[in-house]
Image (cartoon, rainbow, N blue to C red):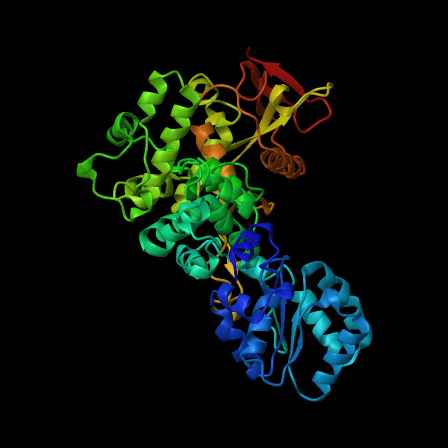
Length: 544
């Protein structure tokens, strides 16, 4: 690979297995358990179908195994989308007739389109079509009873269920990029931002580890699966910012280091990847409060000597203290320089470990940080306080602060939910709610890595669930500890609406309490009892 190939990883071009050479795939290959499991399953005579999203590494893995002659006599179909369906059916059918396994790589959409063709083919191919249909979307589930039955002839591996947000994997991926051939092709490559950044990672395993941990923290906040292509893109952008050589050469004519260091790129907001945006929002060590360090950086442009040393001499560029810039009236530049200084300390100075740890350990929105009881209480408290803030709970009817009130918005106007009056006439008991965690197909072993960072809040009687990901838990955490207006996330609105629909179908007591609020987290307008609730004569008896 070359610098342009490294830069091309950000654009998603040079990580496409169909466009890369054997050497380039070798450079990019980060071994996982699938490197061992797929050849083993093929040797056992099982058909294997690798599916997932574009960029998940299906064709890359298959080409790698073929190149190393680890697929044996298997029929290998590298890309279902690029192969005519009659050809796929013919090759697969012939392999079955000859007693050979088949390795098929297919994005999920084309794979679903193939299912009726397999069933129509009859015989052994029809059985395989039924097996694929039974396994699709049932390999990682919220309840054990939803898992597919253990397959006999064909194993589906859905790489969209694979978690790449593992610090060890990301460290190894970054180390694969730390090669001299990726440096900018210039005699003064180390003076160019991309060259200097790459050298920093080549020389410091600590810097590689810290970047990996930040990417894990950022990715955990995403609602979407991260593909290998997106991971390579984020790593390449952190080093290069996608700069062509012409932009790098311009740096020799007066550019400076601050502002073009790795974590500046990672958190700039200029990169067009969701993982980069997540890093900007949730994994920027410049936002961590560190009074002693902040004072030293502001006044002197360097950490206190007692805090240790730099990890590499790639940080010995000339720095003007932010305080001097501020005093000269350059306020925006002073703040920018302060943030950049703090980021390079976080990545490449002994004092940076505290900043990285504060980002990683300070995130209390990841489901795996809680046991089931604590996660249930966090979710339940947050859901209640989205509608009745901690301050207003003091004067609220007691039943509103136990269990989960079912709030419904009412308005004849086209108003957002947070502006509508809301009424609650029922509450779900806390003991009817439980936390569900991801369950993975046991026959896939360690093929998919750890389960995804998600949980579900389930109302057991109705089986209605609310997905608890890091973003929603962050909102619920802020709701639990704050007053003032907050928008009600749409998933919460849908969850309560579905629960209300279930509750309305249940037998009702003759009397039940009600409360009306001006809007979520607004004033309590009225409360009392619904009388004759089981008849058409139902009426409200308000106490206020």
